[in-house]
Length: 156
Image 1: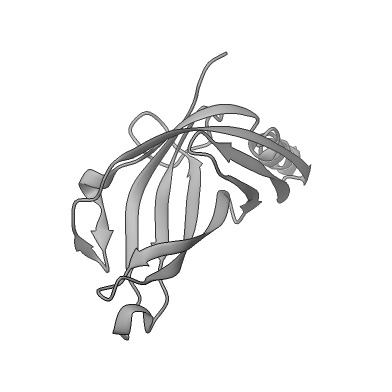
Image 2 (image 1 turned 180 degrees about the vertical axis):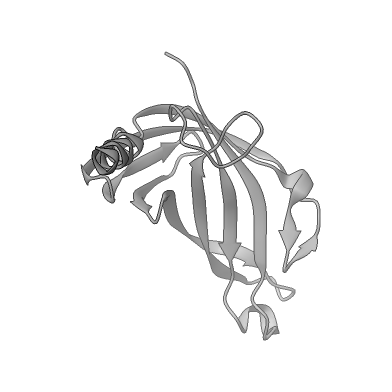
């Protein structure tokens, strides 16, 4: 009986993880890090319209459309949602050229205190992380900027 209860709890904790609807997404620049050093960045707020479906609790895919005018695929992997997008002219170089970056949003369910929890799917925490290319702009160290991320369902 105890094994059946554990199995039942496990199934309940993984069902219904799809993200569908509108979410207020905040990348908090007040706590940003550039290459592991705190450095203020601009705080960015946007609204995402998310659409996803799951073949099973471990395999979910979908798409996010941002109020900032971009669309990107999303996937659920290792207990977190991931949205990847390429930024062609992300890093400005001293000579006036630019270098691309890869932005990755990673987020998971949290409670009101920001602790990782199984919740109703209305609040998520995580990171907005952008990586430049090693060697870009004449530096052998890639620029990496990480901002804390909050994703909150907008009630309809």
